[in-house]
Each structure stands twice: as structure tokens, then as C-alpha cells.
Length: 252
Image 1 (cartoon, rainbow, N blue to C red):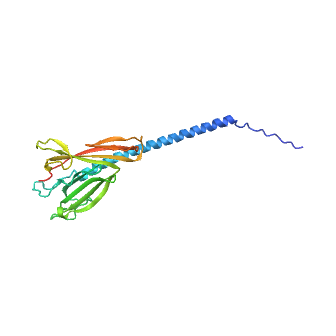
Image 2 (spheres, rainbow, N blue to C red):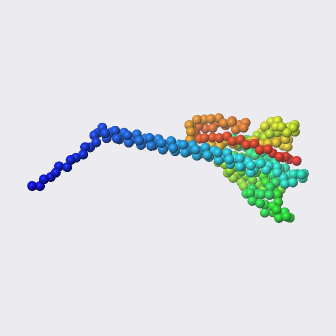
Image 3 (tube, helix red, strand yellow):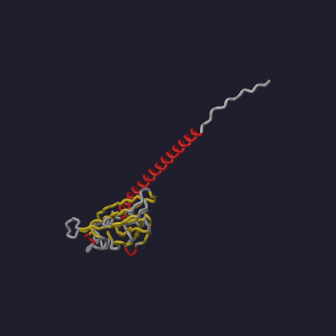
């Protein structure tokens, strides 16, 4: 007679144990999701701060490239009859939230930063007039550049090229020394000077923002030089950057 041994059955989980296990699993999943969200938020915040820092660096580089050389002449002892330096085309409020700054100097490099192909008798690049126009358009700080032998022959080589994105405000003020004592008497807007030779420096301000919303959505008022701007409540980070550049002689 064949005998069958009875196989013992293990004790299964009770309903209460199963509910507790499910609750613990759900809690652990929730914690992991919250940690992932916090990590992502922290990463986006750091990325946005880096974006603002990079815009500030680009702003300084842009001004150093296009404005710091304003009024430069390779032979300053000569009587220069061509207007150079800060130009009268500089305008206050050329568009909403933006001024326009126009400067001119002599340069052996064109708007692309390459040497002038026209050489002098010693084989060195000749100095031509270089004019830079900086203003804001459609949320970008843009640059236009003209280059040529003289004002009549200057040609546009760079036309409204985007230099810095996510810019909301661009402003300029000008330091005047009306009594010639070497001290700044007042900071004024473009076109308010009675004598352009009295302008000794330009102070530029920019408000840039991040592409993404990374903080509490609330409106805030920013002061960019003498201009007040109310930013929308979109949760974007914003930063004001100011930069002051001394100018040389403007018109002889």
C-alpha cells in the first residue's frame, strides 16, 4: 500500500501584515519620490544661478570688447577731426525698458575680431573706424557693428546679433564733469549733456532672468540704475548687474 506523506504548508501572511507591508512600501515610495523632486529642484536652482552668473560674465565681456576701447586712436597726439567715442546716436529709452549706446573708435581689427586685410607700407593692418551699437530687442541684448575707412565708407558687418538672452532691462547713465576739475558732478541720461566732451564715464545696468520658473511666484520691483521695473510673478530668478567704464576724449 502506497503511503503519501503529508506536505506541511507554510504559514501565509495575514491580512493585517499585508496591509502594513503595503503601507510601508507606499511610504518608502513617497519618500523616494520626494527626495527625487527635492534633488531635481536643487539641480534646477543651481543651474539657474549658474545661468545668471554666466550672463553677468558675458555682460562684462561684451562691454569690455565693444566699449572699453571707445575713442581709442593709435596716434592720439594728432588732431582728430572724425568724431570718436560716445556718439550722439546714443538714445535714452530707444525701446521699452532699453536704452541704446553707440560708441566709436579706431581699430586694426574688424567687427569679427580679425585683422584688417588692408595693410600699410610696413605690412601692418591699417586702422579703420569701428562703431558698436548695443541695445535690447525681443528679450535679447543685441550688438550691431560697422567698420570702414571713414564715416562715409563704414559698412555693417554685424547686424543685431544676439549677445545675451533673457534680458529684461538695459539702461545707461553718463558721468559729466562740467567744471573740469576731474570729479563727477552728475549722472545723466543720454542726450542730456550740453557738451559731449564733459562725459567722463558710462554706467550700464542689466536685468536678466532665468529661462525656467524655480522659485515662489511673486512680483518684485527691481532698480536698474535710475529705472524701476516691476517683474512679473512667474517664479524666475533675476539678477541686476551694473558696470562702469571710463571714457576718453569724445569729440576734439
